[in-house]
Length: 98
View 1 (cartoon, rainbow, N blue to C red):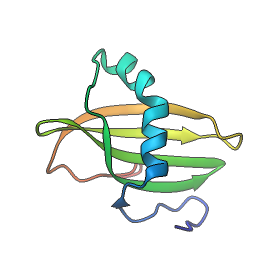
View 2 (view 1 turned 60 degrees about the vertical axis):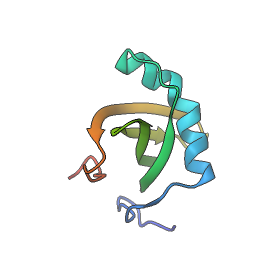
View 3 (view 1 turned 45 degrees about the horizontal axis):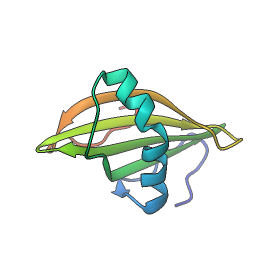
């Protein structure tokens, strides 16, 4: 999935690598949302190439509830949660520029 600098990929099914990113930032998400999640499964994602990468990830958290995560991956491969918004199943995954 090559993406031009500043460009955003199309929405794609989540991969094992995307799930690992979600697992890495889960505690940050729980701190930001003041909730704990037994279910935390990446469903779809988009990737934006910047100085590092931005990931926009739709995560199923149980029932019809989903979170849309905005995660930054720095060039040294550390991950930082930039945003988490509660959504429903039918809500499309957008980038921060949409």
